[in-house]
Every structure is written in C-alpha cells, then in structure tokens.
Length: 350
Image (cartoon, rainbow, N blue to C red):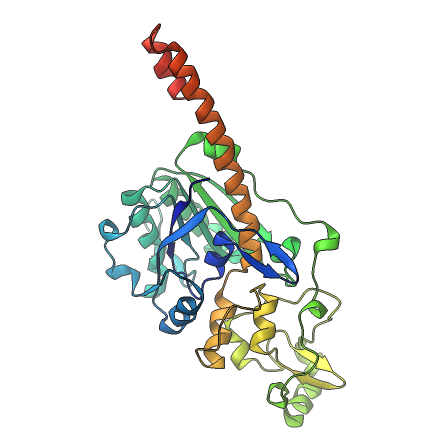
C-alpha cells in the first residue's frame, strides 16, 4: 500500500505518532510497520518536542498552532490531534456556543480551521472521557457539530487502554472523521484483545530502583494517620492494570489520587522508565534528553502507542477495503464507457 501522509497536531512526545507509524516492539510483541508517513508535526512544549525529535526521522516543530497558517501546511491524508480539553464552557447565547476560561480551550477551533482548508480524507482526535459530560453534556454535541460542519461524517467511542494490551486503565474518547461516505460506513473501532494478551502492572515494574523514588518515613506516617479519612494513598495491586497515570507523576504525593507502589512496607512513585512502560512506549524510545520532571509530564500527557496502533489498524482495513471497491468500480467504468457514458458516471460514485 502506498504511504499515506499524516499531519500531527499537538504531537507531544510522539505517543500517537508512534502508534500510527508502528514498527516497534513492546513486551516482546512486534507491532508491524503501517503505511503512513508523518509530513508535519507540531507542539508548543519545547521539552516534548525535544523528546519527539530524538525518536523520529521527521522532526516536530516547536510553535503555537495559532501562529501557523493552514495554507502553509503540507497536503495530507490523515490529521491527528490530541487537543487540550481544559476550560470548556458554554456561552449563554441562543443557540449556545462554546466559550473558554483560558486560551487553551480555544485550540479545538484551530483543528477545525485546518480541516476546512486542507480537507484530509480522515482525522483522528483523542481526548479525556470527561469531554463527553463537560458542561452538563452540552460541550460535546457542539464540538461534534463544528466537526461535521467542516464536511465530515463522524464516529466516536470511549476506548480503555487495558482492553488493547496496555497495563493501564486509561479511558479516552476517540473521534474519527471521514470525508467519504464509503469510508464512514466501512469503519469499525477495534475489538479488544483476548485475555491472554492483556497486561498487568507486574509485567512492567522494575525489580530494583533508586532510593530517591521512595517516600520518606515522615510522608508515609502522615499518610497513614489520615488514610481512612482521606480514602487516598493509591497503592497499586501489581496483579491488576495500573490506574491512569498523569502528567503529575513528578509531583505525586501519598495523599494524591495518582498511583503509587508499596514494596515491603515502603511506598514509592514510579520511575520514568516504568511510567513509559505503563504507557506502552517501546524500550528503545528515548526520554533522557530532558529532566525527569519533563519526562513525567510528556509521558503522562501521551497517547499509549499500542492503543493507537490498534485504532489505526481499523483505518487501514477501511483503506484496503475501499481501494478494492474503487478498483472494481473503475473496471465497470471501462467496460461501459463506450456504450453508455451515463452509466459510467453512475458507477464512479459507487
């Protein structure tokens, strides 16, 4: 299959892009190369961009997307975007419109701006599950309407990373857009992997880590005094998938909701390597060019590559299926072109 061109917005450290391209190994399983090439990637976090550029042949641009002209972007078949979800609100107008508490919330419209001009065949957007219920469930329908007004038919679904061989309970909504009706009708979200392919925390945690990752005795004592009252201290069962990790791992405390580990009565945070493994990054993905705090943030904000790999397989199936249909239609057109030109036009739209 000919390589399809991809534009990656809000690319971060590259979790979503790694899944789209494929060609990596995770927990001794090989994830095949996919027929895509990234022709443009952008993010405004220079540390995430630095990590990205250590791991991909094509380089990400460090820039505010609001400063990028949609006309200057290269043509592409697929647009990707894990757009920021903060601060959605509804402006009291009739009809109601999306409003924002800060600049980050406005970035969704940068995607719409680009879609209307570049018109890629597909797009895939990812966001937190809470987007579905934001602002008393008023925000998501408006987001869908804006995307549809750009000329796309949409399918969306909440996917849990654990269902696809990632050792983490991480629920995210994926919105897939199609310009072509046949693509829309053919697409189905990926099905969960079988139970034997699911992974749990013990599959990725390290046997020995530096003492700096353990909490002090004072911190542990403080947590234990209020543990019942606060219902926190999120110690993980290594026989189960990990709770969702976030960008806050660098500042995790025992009284936060972020997951921690208990080992022989001692509590510790995950190492950056463990966090990357929990997110399903391959072992050869390089994070060490930035500080550990920046590593935690980039990893916690990423889309698990293995989950994205499974999503992109569904899109590849659509492309292959409709390529075969298009080929058959062209043969019909050739057979009928001399006898009845009107029939040829009809077949062209099948």
